Length: 338
Image 1 (cartoon, rainbow, N blue to C red):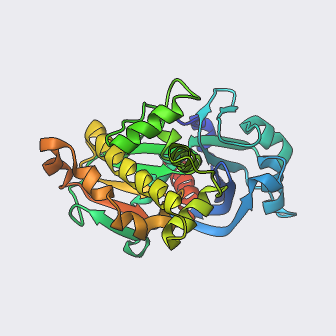
Image 2 (cartoon, helix red, strand yellow):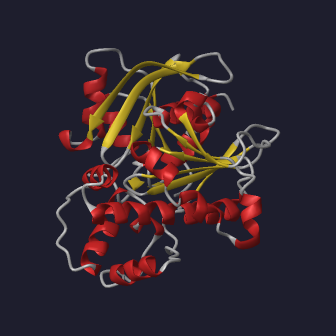
C-alpha cells in the first residue's frame, strides 16, 4: 500500500467542528460523523455511525448521501481505503466494486474537501486507542517499550502499516505487505503453492492470507485430496472449521493460521516492530479463539535464533468494528492540527 493523499495546509486550517469519516472496504463501508473529543488518549468522538453493504449502492457518493439525508453537509470528509491515491484524487484499487474519486464525491455529495488516506495507515493511528476489553493477547509480554508498532489485517486483501513514534508526533508508514511472494514452510503449504501456480506466476501473501485467500487455500486442499468444494464463502469455511463439521475447511483454516503466524514473524523482523504487533479487522475477530489455539504462535516464533527476540514483542488481536473510521478521523485531526 502507498502513502496517503493529504490535503493542502490551507485546506486543513479551515477544519469544521465536525466532519465525515469513512472506512471503505471491499465488502462494507462504515461511515461516521466525528469531531475532536479533547481527550488526548482517545481524541475522536463519533457522533453518529452506520455500516453499509457495498453491493447495495452504486458508489460511495450514494452511501454518503444516504448517511447525511437532509442534514447539513460538513465541509470536510476523510476516506480510508485500500489502494493508491493519485494526485487528482482518484484511487487505484483492486478490491472495490466501483470506482472511487475524491473530486467526484465532493461534487455529487456537496462536500468541500474529501481526503483519501490508506486504510491501514488509518488503522495504525487507531489501534493503540482500543481499550483492553477489545484486545486478545496472543503472545509476548503484556506491554513493550515505546517503539515501531505493526498493524496487520487480512480482509479482502492483506493490509499492513507501521506506526513509528517520533519527538514531533507519530509517523505512519503504509506498506504493500500483502504483495510479496508467499513463503511456504511445510510440505502441505508447498503443495498448495504449486497448485496455485497453475493459475498465476506470482503467488502473493494475500493470495493465502485474506478472505479470498482462505478460499484459495480451501479450494487447493480440496483439489489436492480429489474432493469437490462444497463451501462457497470465507464465512462458510470458517464456520464449518470452527464447528468441526468439515475436515477440509478445518485443514484450510489450520494452514491459514500457521501461514499467518510465520508471515507476521517475518514482518516483525523486517520492520523492527519492537513496540508490538496488532492484528486488526478482517476475519480475525471471528476466529480469535481458534487462532489462539492454533499453530500461530509456534510458527510466529519459529525463526531460529531470532525467535527469542520475537518472544519479547507483544502480539494482540484487536476487536473493534469502528477501528477504521476512528483511525481515519484520528489521521485527519492530526493533519488538521499540523
